[in-house]
Image (cartoon, rainbow, N blue to C red):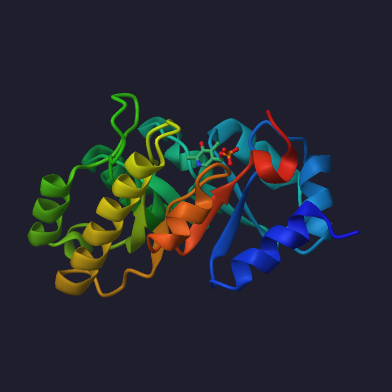
Length: 216
Ligand SMILES: *Cc1c(COP(=O)(O)O)cnc(C)c1O
């Protein structure tokens, strides 16, 4: 019998979409199970959990920070994090740049754009992103690698609304890549409930938790 993991991987392969297995709240044994089936990219949304799991699991795992990140906690993940999806403020960007330099590395990041209607969801808006890019992101933050964008759709059953939000992010991603940041290669959008829609709208990286690990 094919596992859920393998079915999903097969499905994503057809569209060359990268899978981030979102393992927040799951145990290191749960992560091992998926690791043993071949998965190497895992995403967490809390710094402490991420640091603890990183210490206990194989070193060839690429750890992605996907959740809201407090400035004072960047230093804990700076030595090893492979990608930060959730850069939603200048303050955070400055700190990531500073910590990357301290650890003598560059840290790849995604700029998070607020596309959802909910006030709780973080990120820049389109105007802020354009201003940032015009000011010269790469020169201002030399230890940060700007590799793409991330966004989360509104938590709703309205498929048209979700599609419109993804489409908006996809449009901004394409335009910033063309005009300012040819280094962009990752568009991270889509979770368990909406990843197919996200891929249809241009996503090439999905962050999937409950579909893989069961509900939290
Ligand atoms: C939890 C989480 C996910 C995964 O959500 P599922 O619905 O369990 O797939 C994706 N992205 C972010 C930012 C998350 O916090």
